Length: 127
Image (cartoon, rainbow, N blue to C red; front, side, top):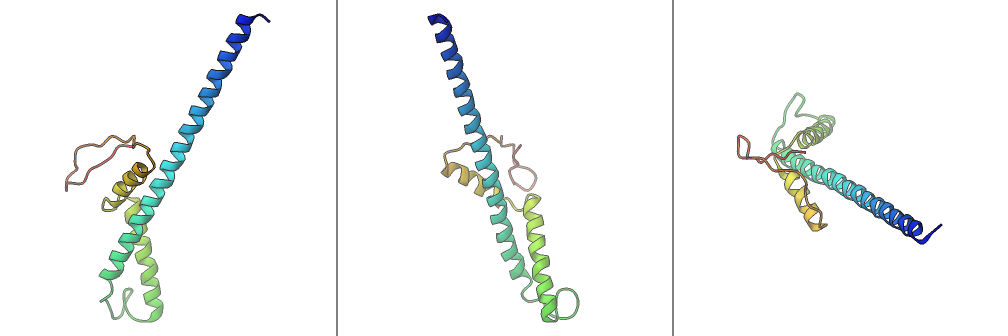
């Protein structure tokens, strides 16, 4: 093999290595973004759970939301599911801000384009 062919093979190998490194870096960034999104959503669900628990503290009596100890346990689980459902479906907007801050702290830019505020003043993001 002559020197030109060897140099060409070395350049090709170097470009392939750079491409593999860029791909690995992109995959790592996607994993970080995925973990940050899950953590932000979990944080909002915890906040909503606390808020809903406080809203229901004064409810007593018969029926599904009052009464015995078993009904209080059931109410706690129901409120937990409400909070998770609210957070999963957009919540009150806390998760988006937490997500942005988590990525900012790790030096990763958010690639989602921010649209005009929706009705009610809440910003929407495209994903």
